[in-house]
Image (tube, rainbow, N blue to C red; front, top):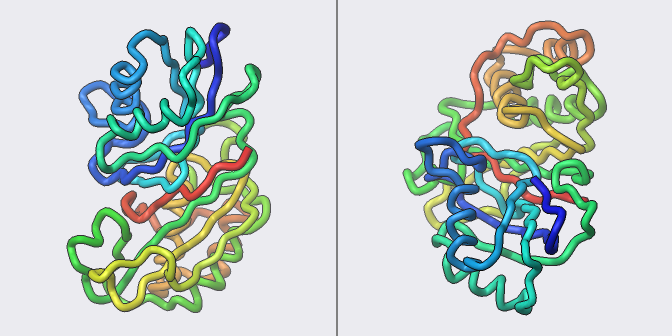
Length: 260
């Protein structure tokens, strides 16, 4: 929601989503939006603060840079650097605010988002250390990474993603992917990580529900030899049914950035 009084701000946060049931407030569930609301009630008790996330995240999904629109009534008079410091002092260890800046009264975090960048980190083969669980998706058995790299590029461009989006809304499945590729992971590392891990990067103006995780799952199906590149082309270009039904684990998915 937006406010008609006071000020409007863009807050950028990072979070480890492993212990949360996604972004949006849900009755009886532990969510990131709920945690942020509680923080603002404590940090800014004399302000009415409305929150609008630039989209939603699924359970266990993390973010390096998640954009949140804030409406503050009355407007903030305290220096924003001080507000940011107090926000971080009161957020749990698995959440952190990067920055806060004023935006125009017409700004809308959902409508004005021009591109989102997701990364799906994963390993396969030998089971990784349990400490990897909050950060990496894991797929047992061998995978043909070279074939998966070739398949990932097929997602680029405008396609009918009916087989890779959980939605019944008319027209919601037509999406344009600016970039999709798989490479060896060199950015997200730790002493307990497997010797090799990989990442799928996907960029686009918008993604449907479960879309990136379903795309990742499709690449795993191809990597296992259970479907081929021609099957993926048929699904994207002609709406043919996709043979895979599984969805990649949420913990491997990270929202890297939202552009406006």
